[in-house]
Amino acid sequence: MLNDLKSLPDDPVELKDLVALLASELKNRDLKIADLKHQLAGHNRHRFGSTSEALDQLQLSLENEEIAAAVEATDTPEPEVSEPKNKPKRKPLPEHLERNEQVLTPGDDCSKCGGSLKTLGEDVTEELEYVPGRFVVNRFVRPRMACSCCEAIVQAPLPSRPIERGRPGPGLLAHVLVSKFADHLPLYRQSQIYGREGIDLDRSTLADWVGKSTNLLEPLADAIGKHVREGQALFADDTPVKLLSPGNKRTKTARIWAYARDERPWNGQAPPGAWYQFTIDRKGEHPVRHLSQYKGWVHADGYAGFNGLFGDAKACEVACMAHVRRKFVDVQQSQGSAIAEEAIKRIAMLYGIEKEARGCAPAERVAIRQKKAKPIFDDLETWLHAQLPKISGKSPLAKAIRYALSRLPKTRPYLDNGFLELDNNTCERAVKPVALGRKNWMFAGSQRGGKAMAIAFTLIETAKLNGVDPQAWLTDVLSRIADHKITRLDELMPWRYAAKAAQLL
Image (cartoon, rainbow, N blue to C red; front, top):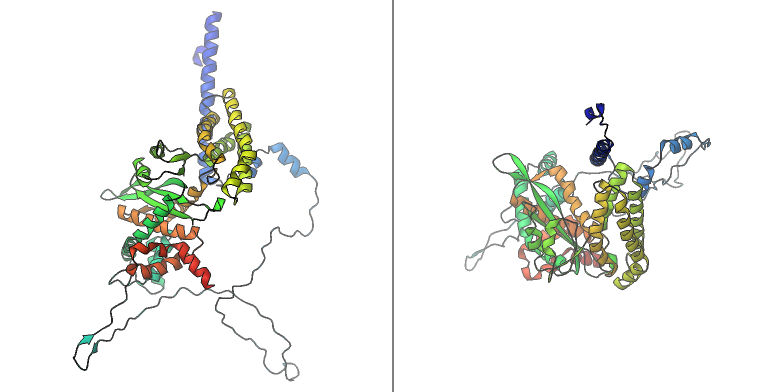
């Protein structure tokens, strides 16, 4: 096209056509450049930037060089001594820790005159020390006894153990599970740590223990899943994990699906829970199967695979405002768009009202939302419709607005139902441990390993949601579950363990 400019036509009509064609090409080029800048900014932020999307951080990026220079040029004398803000205060060490006391005395006689010394008081300095965890060996000694009358030989049976004929105790199995799925320590690292303690435990041995212990705990995980699906609203999301593909030394992308129930924001009485499922792909048939009988409300993102859950005589969908906001955050950070910034501010007002409604009963939450949030929500939708014709339809901002307008009608039900939330962040928090873990243990070795992973996450994350130490709880469960009746699994739930622990205090 640039070469054509060397010989411009003399006909005014042809000249106008050429100008129109040039304008169209320039517009398309500008849109392509804007889209590439948007993608580049997203990649740079993902690799090097902060993960926070707080509004104050976005506002900082709007300051231009002239304002920054003016601030630097301001002649403000600095104080000679500046106290650090938010200086941490040293807390006393916990009373339950074992104290090893060492008395340091100058002696009984004065080093100057030789006179007797008497005590005036004392100064106590406490030092926090760490002693590596210790392994212990439980020896079950069972004498064989013979009857002096009938000469019968009797012997006491072994107590039930998590792994029959296995060597690990319940505490060690719980420690291995929590170390991998809560502290994100791969099994080979655990093996190295135990080796420094003089204990030879191969990675394959630990993997076998994980498989057998999670198989034993599977009914309890299923019971937690049933509890999650009994709520009138739940949260759903998924995240990728690598699955080792046997034979070709490569991995393929599998999925962990998370379903959470948390009624604490509206003072519900049911304890929170998180249920995880593993699948080898992301087909929509999986969430449909997981929630086949569920009839309540499902908070979810816009993934089409969830659509099979919704419809007549099925579950009802609630969209996520956090996903809507994230689109505008991406545009604002990459292009500095004033429209995107205004959308973020309007959404922030809705979250401010949610902060006020948190902890209130459902009816009170509805009253607050109808009075304060509904006008802002309606105005946001109207305002977005008005902005769309003003910008190019192919720009990233237009895509963000169209996404918002498609999701806002499905977010609206939260205004009329106090047990619903404005976003799906409850489940986003539930999948975060999986994301942290996969950076360390990298992949699941098999479908069986993926299933064990889902069971472990179900138990550990549900315990954490209920304020329970997962290692202490799993130790207790593994010591009892082999002899426990499957019809009484409710007695082993983490919230029952928490209630029992509270009574002992």
